[in-house]
Image (tube, rainbow over all chains, first blue to last red; front, side, top):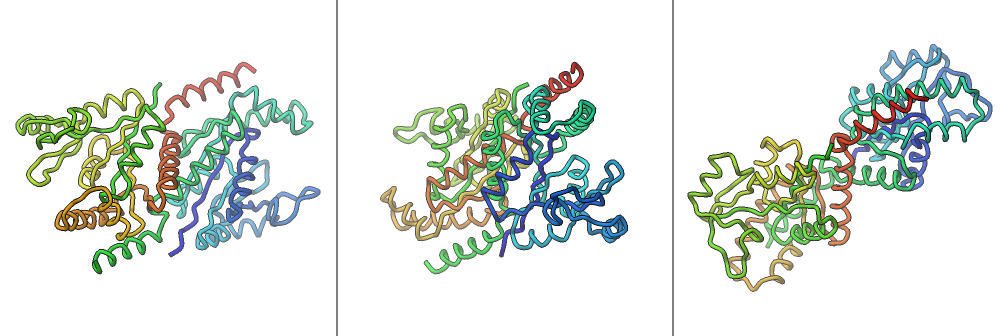
Length: 211
Length: 211
């Protein structure tokens, strides 16, 4: 019997290192599946369907929500974003874990969904707000207004840290990655995530009987 | 605020490597406390009070049980064995984890005790019964009858594997130890085991406010 894949939810304020951690984790285990969100916003130059997003018309997106095909969804600045359920269920059936790079609202919805008991949720905190600010400025030439908006969103995101199973403070990306890996490896060792054990114990019992 | 220590319960049939794993874990982290059992059986030559066991008169043992001072206890071949609660609570308050090398009956009792939510329970399985038998014979010149009795007890112990949070199959002691370490490290990263985070997030919020 194959292990059912788990749902690894990573949330953090923008700039805390969550995307780097997710990418490293997928390099470490290529069987991991990254949950690509669906969105109604228009593709930006360079964005590829199915890589950055699944781009949907509004009516198609709403039809998926109505049909229960979104694990979670939210409206942000007039556009819809959501996590399609089908690919996650397919990965789970194959024993592959899915990584979600989503915010606290998505995290809440997935935890309370039918797949909630397969969720492992991790919140990544920055070492300081000064450092978060530095990382946000380093990666884009955004206006002060855009940065202020991001910081307000970061503060809102951080306020939900206590809803997560695990918390990693990203002082150092290598250390944070080691911690993330430790969590994933331990969660895979949970008894209820090792369905092959039942057959193994049956084989031990047969050995007892034939001694 | 200090982290509350957790209760790490290791169970396995005799010969599956549990004691070696416990010893290695304590070498790795000397702050770990090993739960020394109390017993009414007489000390054997070389046994030291407080190291192998706390040796108690029957009346004293029963008084501790009546007073709720035993986390778990059982009668085995006419002698009582139990885990005193006081030292565990003292260790927890100091943020030190306690390792229990106990059987499934003790595990069940501690899980359903008032400290149950601080328990992390791990079952160690042997790779095969032939190997278990080999390890039992290698370490003592016991009679066939004694060995048969141990094997019957092992089978009973193994039948309870599915009550544990985690399962490790000890094919190789180094690999099994690495898995045990991974579990302990991950459990320490659980959000509810990092009470210092609340203060840390308050400091992040102060930083937001003073920007």
